[in-house]
Image 1 (cartoon, rainbow, N blue to C red):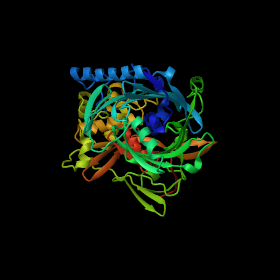
Image 2 (cartoon, rainbow, N blue to C red):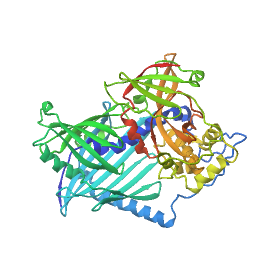
Image 3 (cartoon, helix red, strand yellow):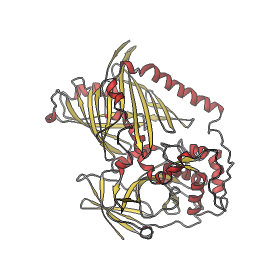
Image 4 (tube, rainbow, N blue to C red):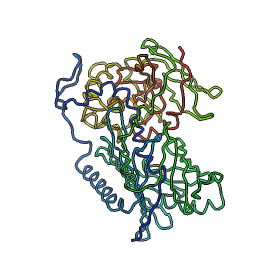
Length: 543
């Protein structure tokens, strides 16, 4: 077996960065109740309103899978773990430090092995971040298999961190990729058809070796294991910026998940990247190669990089509760000229672009209380009725919770109150749990509130989706009241003629919410937000 080394590519650890950035959208409810972190989970003294339908003895129902599906999921996980153990040997790997805004937050190891005419590349990443008073560790591993000529064969993917465990493996066939995914013990399968060729790591490297000889600009189609979908990378050779080590800088734009992520990588003659730099969601990420001891001695998580503090957006005005009950107009300017931003359009929010400034108008309109009597959805709306790996609205426990929530004629506020009372242990220690996990464990932050709320509405046959965005909050600095916008997640439901917001974490939506992107619950929906979050400032807010 021949073994040699491969250097870093910023895209290799995009999946744990995605999970890390999910922590930004959870602060606004968790920090207010962080003291509940030490509550005994067996404590039955939590508050409960007089009209609540929640029983403190709600049973924990087993995972969705029946016995045969459970065994299939366990078999899939076992194969992935075995492959990671066999091929991700840290002793023979290259080490890199991962830096966010100048602070080390973790490390990556990379190893390329040639075995039986196949190339096997393993990419491991470990990151530790501060999330207020909580430290979170996020790990991922990706193994891709190709022929020595670069033909894609298969991949294994694993990501874990603070309650989230996701596994995926794909096998490349003649005209499709068959993909198995396990989330919260639930196995799902899908088959992606393709007609044009695409490439994994080795294939992309071989293509680059040839193309860079004659071209300064080219594209190579690839595949993103995290999203489970095809992607495309555009390459622009920055010949004028060759560094002293004779590395070739290339700007790489990866188009995946509906947005474009740009990074700069420095390559040697074999098109093996030696270091990288890129900006994602307002945070600058860098990597450079180092030895094992240096990578481990950086003590990630002990240095002052706080994911929340990095995401604070100053408000140009103090917004009282009474002001936020009415319509507000936000003038938003990108930090970089001509930077394209994305905002959600709904019954509450509309956006126009005028001379490089985005004007986002947000109202506080509420749906009628008979919102649950709805029929006849278009295809785009109807997809938000379907259960999935993240919002398991067909699970018996979530169905039972939905029946309790809708026992009497409900309103938006009654559903918000129901979910708020059901999640007895709010806090910051959960990374991103599924709706079923929340239903079983009854803990989480605003993303968990949002997913469970969506599950309850879906089980009642009401289209529901998760929103990632910003919410207004206040704090005192040096005795002065300061307004800030922080990352937040909430729910939207489709009612008769459009989408309306439901915020169970804060028990009410108002015009202090700015929606940046939506998702069916899958965290890959955050891709839509990455190109906007952290890339603008609010110039003014007016009534």
